[in-house]
Amino acid sequence: MTSDSIVIIPTYNEKENMEKIIRAVFQLEKFFHILVIDDGSPDGTAQIVHNLIKTEFSDRLFIIERSGKLGLGTAYITGFKWALEHGYDYIFEMDADFSHDPNDLPRLYAATHDEGYDVAVGSRYVSGVNVVNWPIGRVLMSYFASKYVRAVTGFHVHDTTAGFVCYRRRVLETIPLDMIRFKGYAFQIEMKFTSFKIGFKIKEVPVIFVNRREGTSKMSGGIFSEAFFGVMRLRMDGWFRKYPKIQN
Image (cartoon, rainbow, N blue to C red):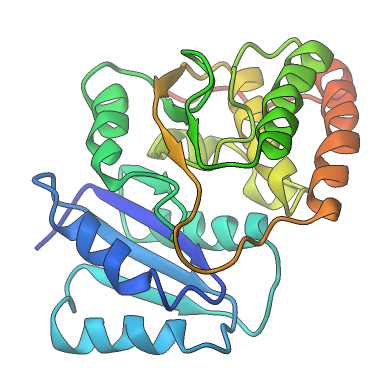
């Protein structure tokens, strides 16, 4: 059965969550497909996906396996290209660990499909601070990181590092994906900032972010340092780089 929408889920050692998140998405009234990008998980995450494809979901669950941890940004770029090649019109980013509630996927879809926005961001900060079970230090770091991005770039999105996003097809067709330089959380900032500079309409949809219940976080200091210094480069890009025009 065909769908106009695909949810891209990058994974590394997510065996505790993998089957649960897939089933949660597939239980929604709105019909989604899922593409898993697995970076060589040694815990058997990919095998769980293969078993579900073989036994139940051969027409709506797909997987790309890569040889190792190549970075969140490159995983999504790989997924974006695959989704464009396979004709999807609405392309989603979502984590495997239930920090993003699958029940919010139809709300992001509605913002793009029904309301005409080009990018819908599942935002933790557009209506206060909607984060559950995070250590206060990490809440403050994430919140003020987004404040910092807004101050440096002049980019008016509250949750610039959000990884819960829906892109309309034309956004990913317009952005030169091979020129996206960042691999960690700065990738999320760069994609939104580039969409904004090109002139696409962005809506923040308020969501509640819940810290992972199972498995271990992939966050590292290097990810945050890339984001911190990357924002300065994005600001300079905004001054000097020539961005593509939206094609009708």
